Image 1 (cartoon, rainbow, N blue to C red):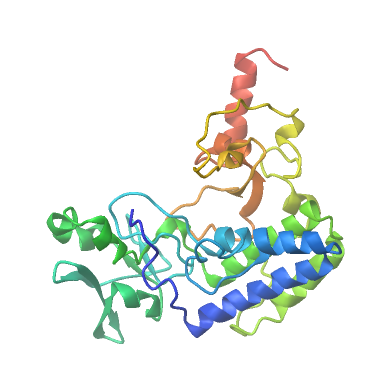
Image 2: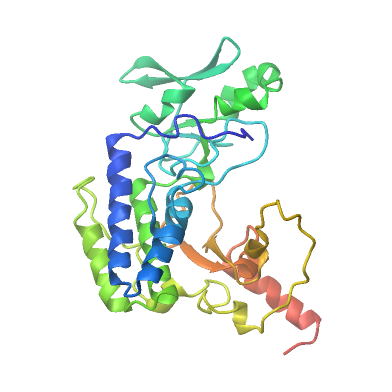
Length: 330
């Protein structure tokens, strides 16, 4: 994986800024409903802070809502994947053609170090180097046939060269901007109600009104039919059906043995706790569909998320049912 930041991480279009602004309004509305000053600070620092970059920033960048709802993950391997990028980023890579993106014409490599993506706009070929692909006017997809002619060159690239070309996201993590915003709103509601005990009906109505009044695209009506209305659906882990602020499946606390750690090393051990909160997808993401949306995105427990791996709720429950029967448990 490119070890540095996504190329053009600080470059946003006017539309990108409007979208992040809209999410900032949602976060601020939640923060206004929190009564305790210390809790307000905690919500903004951990969840609600927005950052005007494609990758949510570094260090003291955006909060968890922006990182999970609006941005892709970093992906390892020698490839031009972004180390986080906006999910509506206009250049994706897929194994097969996808219905929501146009195939590019070809890829060129300038001086063996810079990727150039050639697309057709109104019948005319246009050239977009890595640092400018965020300016593509619509979504395009690169396919294996576009990359294969360059394999001999690309396999020799260093981490520095990959970082200079980290400009693309995987198709299965992509979504439209409206889906990213609604996912942000759903995750924000989950945090507001479950973690900070804000009145569900009151905050739901305020967030729905913000979505309804968006000025990014007047042809799009929000909230869409994907947006959930049930409190428990929003705050509960989608697998075990227990609020994410409680233990997975209401099981008792598990004591994890201490492991030696150097004092000067970072500590992310808490992220491995059974009940630590992670973003989950009810249906596994697929290249051909934009499944990162308000109907499919939730916060849940790490244990439940790990148990699902890349399977649906139904497949996971079928698997668990078989295990229970195999062990003669009732």
